[in-house]
Length: 234
Image (cartoon, rainbow, N blue to C red; front, side):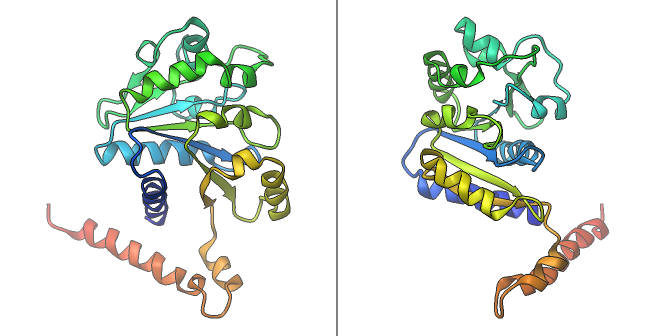
């Protein structure tokens, strides 16, 4: 699908920009809540694991752990508990048997107002450094930039950010303003993912000669491939 190809393009961007690095910490962020960053983070980590890379997916949205909920992870111990008690990833990590993807959930425990301090703490740095000894990629689903400062607090531990925006919803002026006010985050953005795109509408907005007018053909290409696979003999 085009979604998978977008994630593969993101992986190539990481590998080019971070060439020579042993382990890569990738933060997935958005400007507003509900733009699909958790879905992108989960699928990106899944793609990396499926390609044979040792990958760790962390739910770093301690205020609203949508990734953990979406994956149906019910546990009493998560990222916060491990960092506070000085434990390593092995103590709270869950391994997907099929993909070998390691996942660290977050546990929501009422109102915790000091999440930014936790994400920027020496304990968090030690936790990530320990995980880097095992994993080639560490994908962290972080809170949106707009409401809280958590992503900014975690930024020193990140090698590169992926910014997720939603088609037809995320105001460009807000994205520009947010990035201008957070240069430390902006300078580490490797790429942006435009989520939930309406390809037919996008083609109408494309400039003359732009690639947007070919998006229908792209869609047909992927559809035809899936149809061929479906008709192949078993």
